[in-house]
Image 1: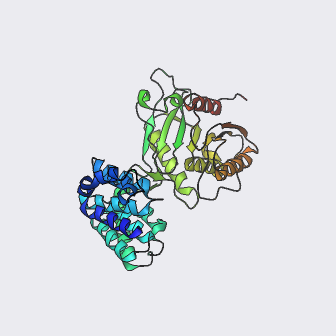
Image 2: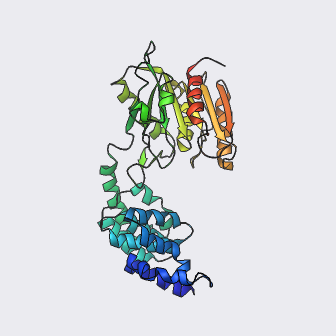
Image 3: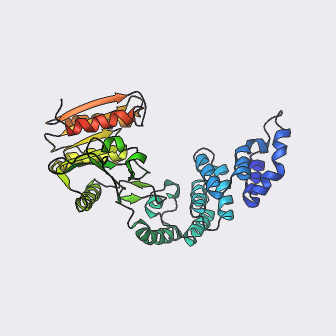
Length: 366
């Protein structure tokens, strides 16, 4: 049975969507019996039949990647054949083949990704699927080529800043505009939108502050996906300060009123920057801190305002990190802690509650 299923899967990969279209009816005829091979393959066949383009095909493969490895491999192979310029599909095929213990075939697909211009070296270098292949010459050659391409690809994107001004009728305070620096979570980016009416951050900007978003210090597997890279937090500090210097050349800002706001990995880095560089920041809004780095064990922050927010249903590791930051930053500072009913997300009322939290940060109220 397993051998037949594998043969059908490989046939699907070789013949693409035509295979699925030719035999789709067979699955319906067998619907009342024990699951046939085609019934078991139905998600793969549906993806091959109904995906309008290779992006959709790859997206379906990405969904299957963890639990349905062979099925995902079929879709990556099909996408590799259908779109000669696609880099992600052969890379993921190589990763799954390596995970399944087929390094020779994996190297072939990895070389194909290299020929197509693979560039996401930081992502590749930490991909656990290739753990058994890291010492191989072919893997190291592809990684070296990807590192060279990454330098060009990431230029102007890593650490890039977007700016959201307060509503037009807002009067600039004496001393310049307060600034809220947004540090995003893992795998997204720092875009806060340039037009207030289209931005989800408009409520925060309308508290009388300029909001800036900063892309993370390392680009991942696509050009809109970033992370805050370690070890430590100095790369993040440098990126934030460079963005503020750039902003100061365009707006009149108050350097004594710089507030950090982060979610998940961005929240961990925001808390660390406040603890380690308190001279640069007046306070922080920490939402659902999370990440794989070790958090700071000491803080020199005094007289700051810190608002900590997380969900009651967060993972235990996030709960522990939240508690660590509460203990770390509570000494000598004014700290407020709120829990919402959800998990590792913004609270349901975030459009109201986050602007209120920022207003509290910038005020003197208790």
